[in-house]
Image (cartoon, rainbow, N blue to C red; front, side, top):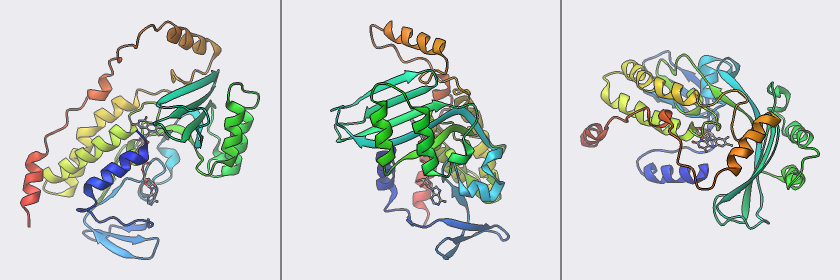
Length: 300
Ligand SMILES: Cc1cc2nc3c(=O)[nH]c(=O)nc-3n(C[C@H](O)[C@H](O)[C@H](O)COP(=O)(O)OP(=O)(O)OC[C@H]3O[C@@H](n4cnc5c(N)ncnc54)[C@H](O)[C@@H]3O)c2cc1C
């Protein structure tokens, strides 16, 4: 499922009950009074009882509240570029991948689309800080790393040069000692990104939002609610973040030996393997919020 499709479903579910403001962004937050005074980039000013920053891995809300990202970011040893290109291969609901030690190139189709997702991932002991805010430098870095690679990689690198939707980033996690300050809380990647290497980012974001809304409904004041949110979720987040370690992703082996072992394992599969037990996925039983939603509906 594509991220945009999920976002569309969630938006459709609540758009008649919730006010959405598109094309604007928080500029400053002022918590001097008994509420949060927000100034938007557009210049508009509004006051809210509570602000929840759900603005992703590179959250501005986090930066303005807790300081620079570097102190919370845990680099996991990989960089990646993702973009779309024409589906000239006729792929449908499938993924093909090429590897060499420390490099992986994948092409995948989520449906019967004219479009393919292209993914170029590589190992790098230190994050390429210079390239992170410079798209030209990102393109050059990826092209250099994948120079001489086989399979469809040269065509993918050419397509990356022309792509208007290139997304480049490092694989990393956000680990923070606290997820709120005063009347401002963080949820999802902004507070506890686990990285795509865990496959759990969307689950943590949705479960986190659910737990936060439950805590707000159950507690009398925001301080107690935000403390309960952290108490209820932190163990689950820690278990899921522990699923990924620096340079240790099975899909992206960094050494020739690890790649050979991975391929030997795959070649040995004669049937679809049973899903491995992943206790972290089910480590949290969601509380029943039905009593609260009934109560909220009854409020005038
Ligand atoms: C390549 C890749 C593959 C992934 N694969 C998976 C997977 O298979 N399964 C999985 O569960 N997770 C996966 N993830 C992780 C998943 O996408 C994230 O964990 C999830 O999207 C986090 O949701 P979020 O709402 O917290 O943040 P995001 O989805 O990042 O949403 C943040 C939103 O805030 C907006 N925003 C940012 N800054 C501002 C600002 N200043 N003002 C206004 N708006 C702003 C952004 O435009 C964005 O819409 C993957 C991630 C990547 C990069």
